[in-house]
Length: 311
Image (cartoon, rainbow, N blue to C red; front, side, top):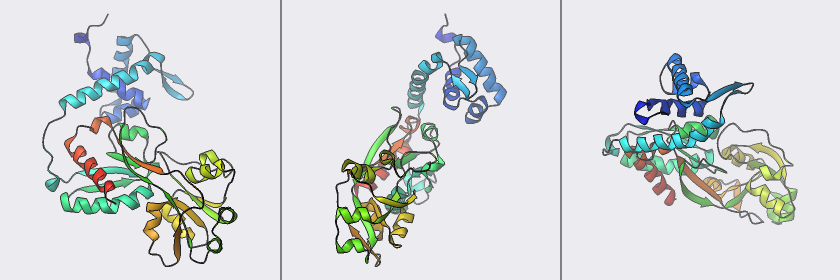
């Protein structure tokens, strides 16, 4: 039986990273140690636990059942230690030159970032923002603290993530002033018109859309499917500004109202409420437990939340 005083607690850090990355080389790079050092750490873990920990398969390295059972408890232990040793020092926004990395859909970036930048200019003029798209990062990047916050609509999140709802938004239809639909604005004519689809939730690289799979098309098409209808989608895009520009070409863009309002002064376009009910969407901010008690991060996410509360 192992005694706690005989165990190198650094091995817990190695174990956590190996289970995150499932690759010795990548785990070593994340911890800034050499691959031989990580391989030696894995060897010691296998001896300590009397278990192979990671097993090579045709799909790569996969964790054993013992390793899977240990993953969450080990992570919680490390989070607790991180919290305990986090320096309790004040953060001075006016003098910091910190870079905050944010993952945000272009909907979130377009509607929130201009106001956030104005707040930063007043309170922390030397702060730099690095804004990335959902396709640029993964859950692991947020979990490991490589990204300060991620802002989007998320279907599912790991329980370890911290999160805060920023706002709810309803939907609007954006179309040309001379669009035929405006002559008789009804659901029947809406369905006969041609549409541009736009959405991007969660993380990761998107895949091709199936126009016949309403359950994967998102809020607008799920609402129509509930009514037994579907619209005629001519263009699929993950970029809200592309959708809004295509409205000038005669397509109808049904999208979150805060995004549509960015074009409310466009003399070629008109905003209307959709001719059917669509559930509101929620915009959420998430961050890693590793950053929960960081003074600068705490200040920054509070600023983001306050900015979102004052549209």
